[in-house]
Length: 114
Image: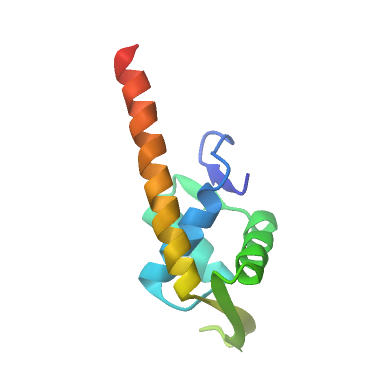
């Protein structure tokens, strides 16, 4: 799926977009390597984002108008595309956070009932 838990490959569809949007909203303009590093660090190394999933997701979110991309220079003096969240991306992030909260609540209710 793109986001790989340390011990398992199953992650819900759509989680990668939520994590990317949240990361960029919180941290500001970032390039791909910085996004993956932040997600891995913030998850205490429980999640790892694969390059093969990250860049198609970034491209899709840019195409959808949720992110704005521009070329810049990294801290290692390399050319890279930097991504910033747009107003539409902030609205999408709010929708995805609400959806995730509903899903989490539903799963918790099922786990408590068993």
